[in-house]
Amino acid sequence: MADDFDIPPADEMNEDFDLPDDDDDAPVMKPGEEKEIGKQGLRKKLVKEGEGWDTPDNGDEVEVHYTGTLLDGTQFDSSRDGGTPFKFTLGQGQVIKGWDQGIKTMKKGENAIFTIPPELAYGESGSSSTIPPNATLQFDVELLSWTSVKDICKDGGIFKKILVEGDKWENPKDLDEVLVKYEVQLEDGTTVAKSDGVEFTVKEGHFCPAVAKAVKTMKKGEKVLLTVKPQYGFGEKGKPASGNEGAVPPNATLQIMLELVSWKTVSEVTDDKKVIKKILKEGEGYERPSEGTVVKVKLIGKLQDGTVFVKKGHDDSEELFEFKTDEEQVIDGLDRAVMNMKKGEVALLTVAPEYAFGSSESKQDLAVVPPNSTVYYEVELVSFVKDKESWDMNTEEKIEAAGKKKEEGNVLFKAGKYARASKRYEKAVKFIEYDTSFSEEEKKQAKALKVACNLNDAACKLKLKDYKQAEKLCTKVLELDSSNVKALYRRAQAYIQLADLDLAEFDIKKALEIDPDNRDVKLEYKVLKEKVKEYNKKDAKFYGNMFAKMSKLEPVEKTAAEETEAMSIDSKA
Image (cartoon, rainbow, N blue to C red; front, side, top):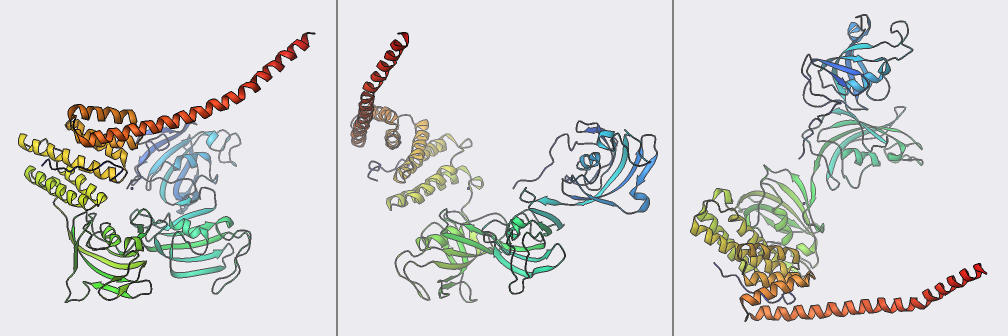
C-alpha cells in the first residue's frame, strides 16, 4: 500500500429559525405572574398565554379588545362594551406610550393587564373628565391579531403589509425567475397597471424598482399591499401612459397589490457563472449525486437556435441515459450540474463552450455542434446510486474502499487530471479518518493509506499551485511519520513557493540527514540556494537604492542645519 509515486520538482510539474430573544422587552412569563416592562414603571400581569413565539413590531397593524380602569376600579373605556375590536398601528404614536411599549410584548391570543404610570399615559393633564391628572391606569388587553407591516428598505420608501401569509421560509434570489400577479393604483384609487400573471428575473425587475425589492422578501403564495414612495416608483419624472398602462404623475406614491405565485430557482453551478441551472420541477429529499455516482437521466440537448443535437430517455422504447459522474463520460457542464440535482428534479441548463464542446466541432446523435457553441439541456434526474457511505461500512470495507479510491486517484494523476485526482485522495482518507474501532493490523493498513494518499494529494496541490494546502497535507503525514523523506521534500517545495526559505532549508537538511543520497532532495536544495541568491540580490539592490537616496539627502540636511545656526547667531547680535 506504500506505492505512492514520485513527482519532479514543483516548477516542472459556499436554515436558520427565528426564535424569541430572551430580553426585558419580551419577558418569559406564566399566567398570574407580573413583571416590569422596560425601566419607566410599566408593569404587565399575564392572564392568559398566547400562541407561538411571534410578537408584533413597530409599523404592524394590531387588533385588540381592551377595558381601561383607574386604580380604584372605575372603568373609563372599553371596546368590549361595543363589541368592536380596536385597531391601530403600533409604534406610530396613535395610542399612549404604555400601549406601544406593552403590546409589543404580546403574542396572538394573549390576555394581559398593564399598569401604566402617568408618564406613559396622559401625564399631568389627564384626559377629559374621565381620567384625572397624574393618573396611573390599568388596561385589560387581549391581542386578537395583527397584520405585519415592514419597512423593507429601512428608509420609509417601501412599506409591506402582509395580507396572506406564504408557504415555508424560502425567498427568491436575484437570479430566480418569479411569477407574480399585481395591481398598481395611485393614492386616489386610479388603477395604472394590472397583470394576472407575469414572469421576470428578480435581478432585472419589473414595472418599478419596488416590485423586485418586495419580491425578495416574500414567500411562495404570499400576498401583500405595498405603499411605495416616489424614489422606488417613478420619482420626479413620473411615467407616461403606455399600452395598457396608465400614466403615473411626478412624485406619486403608489399602492401595489402584489402576489408571489411561484418561482423557478436559478443557480450558478460554477464560480465563473458559465454553467447556469434553472429548476423547472423541484426534486425529492436532500441527497444529491457525488463523484463516482451512477446516474440515470432523461435529457434533450439544444443549440441556441433550437436545433436538437441529442435526445435520450424520452421515448417509451428507449432506455434512460446512464453515466457515472466525474468520469468524463459527458461534457463537464452537464456532469457538474447533475451533481447539484435531487432525485426527480427537472432543470434547464445553460452551458458555455468552456464547459461544453469547446472550440472544436462535435458530431452528436442528431446534429453537429459548431465550435464555440453555448448549449442548452433539459435534464430530469430519474435516479442515482451512490457509493456506500463510510458509516454504513465495517472496518474491512472502509480499508478496501480507501484503497480503491487511492488507485483511482493514481490513474487520474498519471493522466494529468490533478484536481479530480485530489478529490479521490481526499475521499480515500475520509473512509479511514476515524480508526478507533480498527484492529491493530487494520490501524497499520489505515496509517499506510493515510500517508500515501496525503502525500499524493500534496503532489496534486503542488501541480495546482495550491502551496498552502500542499504544506498542510505534508504536515499531516509528518505527524504520522516524522522521518518521511517525501513529506519533507514536498513540504520544502511548498515552502519555497511560499517564500518561507528558512523553513524550506530546515526540511531539506532534515531529509538529507535521513537519506543523504536522495537525488530529488539534492536537486531541490540547489533550487533553494538559487532562490536565496535571487532574494539576496533583490535585497542588496533595494538597500543600495535606499542608501543612495539617503546620501543625496545628507548635504541638504547639513545646509539646513547651518542656516539654523546662522539664524541663532544673528538673533544674539
